[in-house]
Amino acid sequence: MIVELSDGVHRGFGEATTNRYYGMTLSRMRHALHAVRELVEATDALDPPSLWQQVHDQIPDEPFALCALDQAAYDLWGKQKGSPVYRLWGLDPTNIPLSNYTIGIDDVEKMVSKLREVPDWPVYKIKLGTADDIAIVRELRRHTGAVFRVDANCGWSVDQTLEYSSQLAELGVEFIEQPLPRGDDEGTERCYRESSLPIMADESCIVEQDVALCAGRFHGVNIKLVKCGGLTPARRMIDEARGLGMKVMVGCMTESTVGISAIAQLLPLLDHVDMDGAELLAEDIATGVRVTRGKCQYPNKNGNGVELIGQSAQE
Image (cartoon, helix red, strand yellow):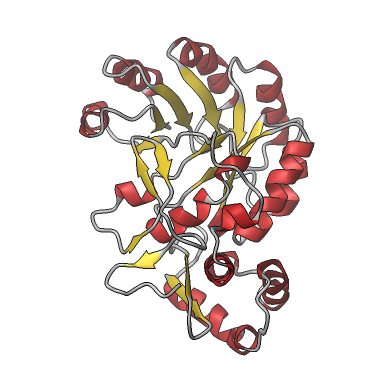
């Protein structure tokens, strides 16, 4: 879903994907946005954090819709101000993390084939959760010297996590993402203490209130804009995680360049990033930030830098 905000001169764009697991459909998101349409249209001087709070008070249980609206607000705000959003935040993009490329869970031959299709990325995120996870990583390692990250998607036990972590460390894996199900606090604390690799929260860190709960259980958090409600809460989550001594990552949900360009505004604040969503699409719908071999390339545009393909720019 793409949200467009316009002041009659400039246009801002934001995005949210549908998601069956979280029950987020297009009709649900549309309904949520229609409920706050009058509030948004009555906004005079645009201030994205203030608008976010007003809208959140009206639709607190609709983070995906709120995310798309929040991204559009920042894109429009930056275009009104004549500057990229990251610059308006006072951020320097000189040293920013490289994005991984995701290798989806499949049989090992297909996973190797997927890696060979994009052989020149510096970092790969490998989705795991099979009976042959170590064998998969070992086989993929034969085909590249790149850094690996693994995402177990809540699919391992404590004993598996601890056993696998030492083997994965020897195979050049950087960290393990969400090995245990959300809510297994005792098991997660043990993995935090005893794992040979850092443990990163994903499903255990959805909204702002989750960040504090991850301290002492995870070495870092992976924040998803659609799940937390957009750039406004994501910045607060980043600050809180930093204050608690945790590493910070932002991930994507296979968004187009609209959503990926929003993530890019946060890059100077991050240790790690997963922003390969647009690269996984058969056809993109927008221009803006590009990720080439893991490296983010910012356009010479204001706001989030987004322009829908087929529409003329108005800045």
